[in-house]
Image 1: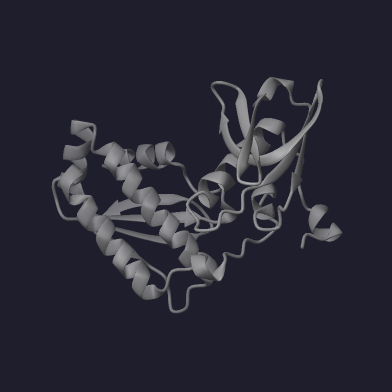
Image 2 (image 1 turned 90 degrees about the vertical axis):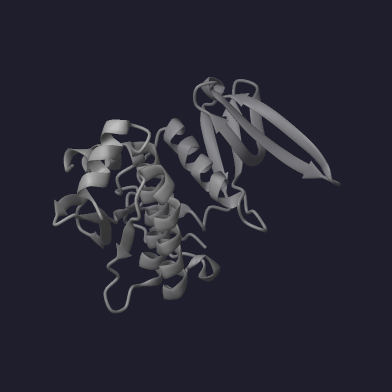
Amino acid sequence: MMNFKTMLQLPVLETNEVLEILQEVADHERKQENPNMPKISFSNTEGTISGYFINYDRDKGVVLIGNWYDNEADLQYVSFHSISCIMLQNVKDYVHLLSDGKIPFTPRPEEVPTQLQLKKELKAAGVALQEPLGKTLSIVFNAGENPSDTQKYYAKKAINLLQETLVILAENNLAKEAFSETVDAIEFEFAKANTIELSDSVLRITFSLEKGWKSVLNKTELQNAIEKNL
């Protein structure tokens, strides 16, 4: 449960920032066996609209919310520009996303991979990248002696981030050729800053978790940083 002391650590966010966070939560929850979608209320010129957040399209400026009554769906498409206030409920599982790194994130036990599962994820990512990159790639997570559950949770996210970024990089023939000629392995770990360094055909990457996943480079930033080292 979120207490008053926790609330005092939350920064002020613009409504569009809140919607982006809600979209992130919804994208995560829809993959779960029992999704716990955020429950929200909007205030606009017509009054108050309540329901579960389903989707948000920034380009269209529309938010989709819904409710379920006796197995019947009630859907509402709300113009983002008409929203004057967003009220959030059942936020305890993702309140850290609303903070600026001051509220720690604790993953659910079922979301924390074991060391063996991480090794399998690393190997699978290397195999999956063989086709787009045209070569076998070794990916290593420098976990230290006893990584925390949070580090293991974020390590899985980092593996997915690396895989998705390198697939995009490989779409550019020049970048693909440069990468294949200079990189044989990737090693990553968590540190205080985001850094990338190429040495002896090994691309060493550190991801900053100072503000949780918010402080990690996004795919575009990571791609640009990798290409600068090739």
